[in-house]
Amino acid sequence: MSDAPVANIHLQFRKFEVFENRRTSDEPHQAVNQLNGKKEEHSLEFARLAHSFEKMEKTSSRLALIAILAELFRSIDSPDEIAKVCYLVQGRVAPFFEALEIGMAEKSVARSIAITYHTTVEHVVTLYAALGDLGRVAEQASKEAGIVPQVLHIDDVFQGLKTIAQTAGKGTVEKRIALLASLLKQVDSVSAKYVVRIALGNLRLGIGDATMLDALATVKFHDTHKRKLLEGAYNKTSDLGLIARTLWQHPREEDALQAVARLEVQVGKPIRPQLAERLPDAETIIKKMWVVDAQYKYDGFRTQIHKDGQQVSIFSRNLENMSQMFPEIIEATRKQVQADSVILDAEALAYHPVSEEFLPFKERSRVK
Image (cartoon, rainbow, N blue to C red; front, side, top):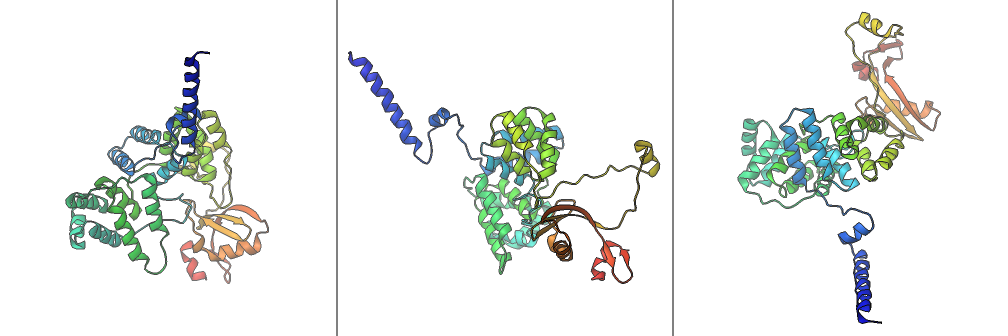
């Protein structure tokens, strides 16, 4: 046997050993991922998202917004990251039905900006009077201060904002001010603008759910007509982040479609309500529908009641969790609804037990 084949076999074995060693490390080599049929995931920098926000803000064209979103979504590999980006595009850190909002007051945000950029609250207020937007104030103050930003990724900023939203109890205001200031110190001026707007609950992008679904369909299926399939799942789950995560978990188009189709209604997560089309008058309605069943329109509050054992949640037609507003409905549901797990689509009415009259809903407090 000649020496050459032996050397060749030895080299192949050495290469295999290198791959095996790297597979056990925390950061697998890209070549190993390719052998496993996986794409190496790259975390998106928040600055990239902020600059996409800036592009969206400058256009009113829906087609342009879809294109910008699609370009952004294509740059994301991780299912968890695409979900977080979807929430951030909505100006949130959770689905709408989760009672997790930042909603900082303007005065608190102004103090955070002053602390971050070593200026006075008075200067921040002066800039606010001139610019009319605390996000732009943060952007301007960052430039004036010459901030050298760190490289923060989506998860860094998302978790920072989520921590602010979750902060509660004694000293909440001061803690939130400090947390926001800490986050602003680490980001560039454009990112600061959008971090502040998210903290205020006023992102100002004008991105509707349908636009986001179109962008997801464009990236995943190269076809906006597939939005209808995604919309069906969204109507059942009310969670764009969940839809996006599910799509990104399945690289093959057919697998992704099937996974989304399997998403079902869950007690505790509101179903998007079907709203009636508005027409100008009764004559037009009858002309369009021919046969019409009519009923009185009560002056109430549309509620979606979810009961899972003794856990009862109430959502508005805008998917907001209104449970704390209606303790009497929660108590009545526990006592009167026999089903262990149920979703009720209802109209909450103010009722006077003595006069036995339905009252305008705004008078609900008077009935108690």
